Image (tube, rainbow, N blue to C red; front, side, top):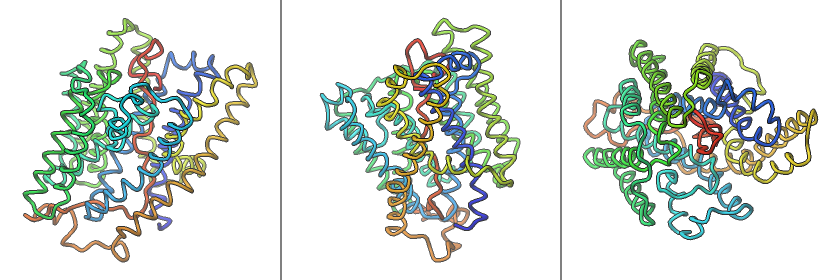
Length: 445
């Protein structure tokens, strides 16, 4: 990738680094630096801040990647090659090393199918590891964005973001898991495969049918089959992601900036309304926790705003590097904490916790680099070999998105990535606790 292009993406990597560190902090401080956690958790929900910042960044970059080169097939090959190798490797490793949820043991086939769809959070099955919940929302977003492109509604990001925000407020709290059955993962897999096959068709009518099918699938699952921990924010997440998309479109001059600003305002207000509603349901609607919600929202929006303002400047190499390995960092950090956290809690106390935390983070980053180097990158290279970009990265004019939007047979539209753009997909792991430690959108699942 050219140095200039890398520099243009470095600010996004830096934001992913900030988000990843917030999430790791939210989880590891259950075992070390607990007094620091107790003090900071009164003023910031670090898990939710990290999660939503990840989603905002993903919403900004994924549609840009989808539309840049005009090849929907290449987009899906690239996305799956980007996500699946490490996703499968971590899932298998966790099943081998750590205890598996009883429900998965009882229904191993259905549970496996649920995870292979990358929509397991919507199936009612326990996750192999809790960090995978955000990948469900990430995959749902991919399906929505690709379908909207085929339907030529892809530039309606701002009203879609606002619509999700308003819907989140009007439906809160969602009634979760209304469709749970051992057959549900299989049914989802069948509809998903059929919808994607239609979406990738060169025939306009078939592609439209596939797009409508996938949108119906995603909306049905989001509204009726959320995990209980997302009864208050299940629709806020796509609202935040489409807000990121609206910001991208405003930056590129595709929509007026005031439309993106309006969408961000509506979604930000929806976040506060629903977070306050959740606090009320927990009997915790106090000035302190309300202030914490406001501060958390300001950190999410403020971090992205600072990154966006500095997008043409050089960013610290350390942050860019952490962002580069952030997908690995996200997927492996909770299993590693599950294996080591109790030992740290039992044996490390006092000032030594600072050094122990630094050592843990250094080791975790080293392991993340190894999984990135030997699992993520080979998958990305395989995707390039299977579906390479056009010579020189050029895209014939007749296949560019703006031209395809005017063609009746433009169903085979966008996708493709000039590079493996190191998108942190669904990373998070914060915001899924439902116990006494979870207040206002979660405390880092």
